[in-house]
Length: 381
Image 1 (tube, rainbow, N blue to C red):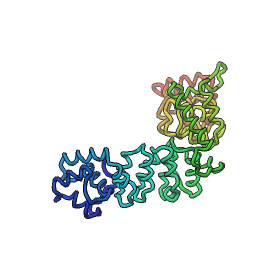
Image 2 (tube, rainbow, N blue to C red; image 1 turned 90 degrees about the vertical axis):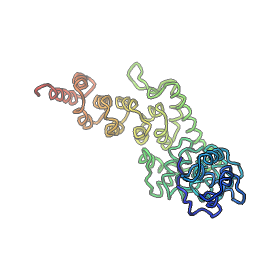
Image 3 (cartoon, helix red, strand yellow; image 1 turned 135 degrees about the vertical axis):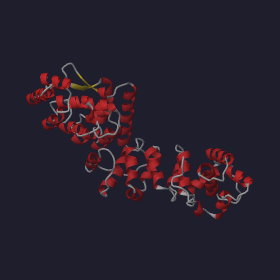
């Protein structure tokens, strides 16, 4: 793993340079690789060990490098904690140490409160850290506004509390920051109409509701219930599958902002329910999710329970409409805007056009156009 940001060796304190330099005696190097250098501060010892283990120093032999790597894996707590807390530690060393203790909340708290921390280190913790870690990241509003990519990472981390995701999103919207998150337009629109909760030590009821919905959605996924969380009854009406009803109930109790985030980060079962939400903001967020699979999109494209806006978004997604199944389902769906269907029908194959030409479920205009496109494909036409 390369050091990021890189360490400028020339800027390191003289005692560190003497130890890592090519003129250092071999016994001293080996002692340093073991983390035992008299006179050096904890952050300096950690820096030496990190450089011996990971930096490209041509004068360091394999034995010293391997020893330093072993020391790094079990750095003595006084050295580790001293390095994590010192504002004099190089940001690249701090980043590497943080990556070695991703689940140690006490260690990560030291990292996050260290003024030497690099933005990319904050971003990684925001993207992958635990609930407690994300709460710590979210407290530094100045850094969030200076680097909106940290807000993006917090929002997309499933472990971030829903109330915290709302708060940092609201912070970005109020300060005119454009975020690179799926369905940002929908999320920003939703948050402007909602009450933003203040930070608290314990999760709020909305946080618990969102977490419970996530657990139910993941349980359904393990049970093999994905986009089929919504099924057709004997009359052809779309209804919630029995096992998915507890999830549907929790989704029903959510705010619009919660639904949009669930649409973005949730499972296929959650998306199957949310895409049929009466609120256009929520439904559209589903088909902007980076987790949406081709099979889900094909199912949605054939549904008469979704809005025209949803179908239009799918039709305008160049990656999705590469699928002939999706193109056919959109054209065959009477809820698809007629202009959209007419644009797609010219790309269908002969067998698909034949089905449309004979179908009683499409408009006369689409059936007629399917016949015309078939005629064009005939030999000699």
